[in-house]
Length: 258
Image (cartoon, rainbow, N blue to C red):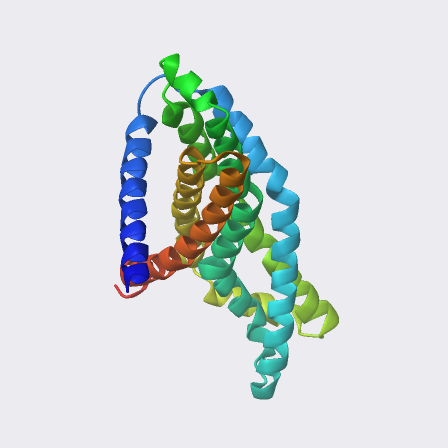
């Protein structure tokens, strides 16, 4: 019983500290100076350097999903709907969630480890001594860069997921190309795409702030860096899945039920 109580208390404490950290990050976002050079550098690191892994992931996911749906829909002679189903699923759910999870593994862990190392080697303390706020200098540029590049990479994932679906359905499985695109353009609505881009921007804030939060609260040397990195990856992944459901419910209510 004491263990359960202690776990709940710890979770509430961490959640409260993270909420204060998130509010502080949002507050510092609109304060000068605006560090454009850091913003561009992080956009390159988070976005450009992640293009290949996102492209490969989206392409293979689209191909696998298309293969499974084609065989299933052939039972009902509805294989021409494969493109529309893949595009809708990628746009609303798969593309933003898959992109966020891949970027957690690649960049979220890197942020936590980098900031954690700076914390345990007292570089953060030195920064504060020089009257430079660590959140303003280290967290805000990363968060803004993520907000910009996450939707872009999600859009790329949408395109390549549909391309992978087309290759499997039309080239390998013999689905008629004209009917494939006819069903695709008839059923897909712009709302299916930009709802996923909205999710991607929110996921960017969640991933960046959680990763930086655990990095800046690192303790106990090199061992603590490893622990903080693990916590950042696990917490970000769980938070993304929970946020995905909440956002899906909100967006369905706002965009599709009216």
